Image 1: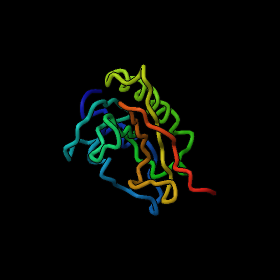
Image 2: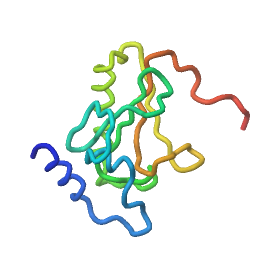
Image 3: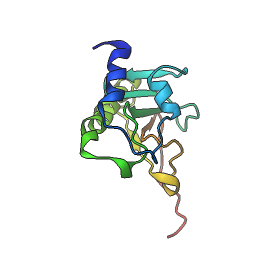
Length: 139
């Protein structure tokens, strides 16, 4: 399969989601190339594009092509796509020239975790020293 055929196939392979779950996100539209984005990597399982509000010189979102709202919604059927997030991250870090110095991979889950778009995604952030993960504000 090539081009939009594999994306259409990927988006339809998984069983129907529960009606209470999100059916469409802005990321879904980026994956299908219905809205513009600076896509740096795409295959049959994941799509990666530059964040529109970068927090570092390199800030790329890596998204499974199938919609999974949160990490809490992950099932065994998503394992291949989620594994691909990591192999894609390594390839992209090499492409971007940040692999050797290092980078950070971040996933947020739900409101308290800082999730803003309910389509799981991994942030690949690098290109400068990143400092501590969290500010020390006590427990």
